[in-house]
Image (cartoon, rainbow, N blue to C red; front, side):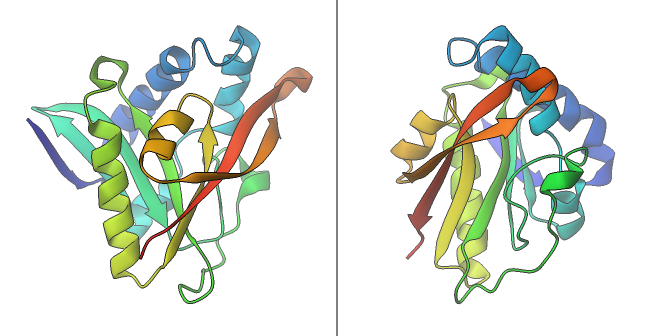
Length: 177
């Protein structure tokens, strides 16, 4: 049985471990080994989500099964180390889309409803904050889940990674009303 809660600073190391496993394992078959390695420079933990109280942890017993959040800030994707992607400007719910951010599932919990639960938690919280739309940058491995949750592709993008290796991503969006 899954439970959920808001992440706290005490969860940082455990979250980083789950993210590293998810990046390394769940992108196999979607990305080359070089692109998976480059993903570590593009993806990761954004502690602003934890500070804002908008980052969820889904647990099975005492183990993190998955995590993800939403944001009322302009940053669309990237972790703390992705300083060139950061924009802490607040979004206006009347005109802007909430950001769905940093969704990761522990490989042992993949395809068990964890991602759908995190999406529902994020969408409900964004809706309660007045947002009528949500958008995200999806990995190729995450796209099937997001499509199943009603998101549509807006554009294909590439995030520049180290050593000239680009990581293919998809900007996706959905109406929340």
